[in-house]
Length: 563
Image (cartoon, rainbow, N blue to C red; front, top):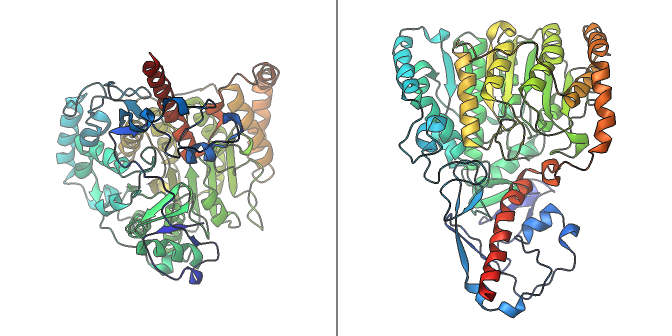
């Protein structure tokens, strides 16, 4: 569903799934970043259910008013009390005004992360940089790279107009998919002298309708275009658009298409698409999960138009790329491999189980590695790469490789809650450079902690430039849950990729008892994991983490009033 605000048009011609709603519900939104009003804006309203009875969506809609007691005895003072707060620029979570550092990520209130990226000190104010030598060394290397031929350089796709895509009306906190994500990565690359400097830029253009029709239906294209006629619109409750979002989406897709064509034809060594809005949740018909057009699918189509017969799309975003899978699940010329949190379908978007392996002749060309829990780190990812990803990819022998590079599985990300480090991302990238003669395009997807996303993206681009990862982890030992996931996937995919048979047998003989041991222990600690760790809804998890602080502050204020 799309909710349109501030526009007048005939929606019937676009989609039967679209409807127009008004803005007002009698509640004034707080657009500022400096205070939260601690009041019951729906004065007199009583909630019939308890806090435990409410869904996360209902919690979000009710703005955190979960008190079961009758608060009428301290009216009307509550209607005039405010608690000054600030939102962390790094993770967007709310903090009390007296705090200097974010209580979640530790970032300084006046952090310079938007000026210097992850090279800015997290403990000091804006102008403090953690390592000036990185900046100096980067610039000296940049000057040496100017004499290199363009086809030997890494190409980067970026356009400032993609920063225009933003949520018009801020809700209780900033939306995690925000323009600062690109700003932080661009600042990191500039401070390190990587881009501009050691990489070359490609000009941006808007993708054409004909190119989009190779992967999307008219319904997707028309609904995204329709949003340009409205001040604010929503495709789903957490997928926003403004009047510039359609332009940003076309620019992102156009950059990805041109990067793919340039790399495959030899006009660039490899490339990084620094783009937004992201794309891997966008399916044939629908925009969802912060995604409007599917950039990776558009890039794969462009590579094939340039002559590539087989394309590999490796998706390491913490959320399953349901849109990419939908587009290519019946296609033998595109191999889609995704590593993501799944947890039995409880983690957003709920798709991507190991038994989803393709259909209608495309069986085996969809490979899902669904982690059963949060907290997954480098060892599990590298173990899966060594025993699943690379054996299948080498057998497939792609002519072109695309990484759907979401960095929300990175350590510190507020939505992914996993533990992959920049070194882990760099090593996975290095492993993939051995495919398709190095013809590799990395496309930005998710990632919502600015320090995590900028450091990880920089580590990946350094590998594209030919640098070795800071360290190479060898003979990694997986977690027990990670090992079980790998064994489950091998058992299923062995039906389509016989090369996996010996690997499966070897792992069972060496690690079988190790995996079974954990099953018995897991029953004993089944309910120890905190509830918030298991909830994977993108927007509502983000809200729940910050809401607790507001509730605690409200209780303290009530106590002080009675005193």
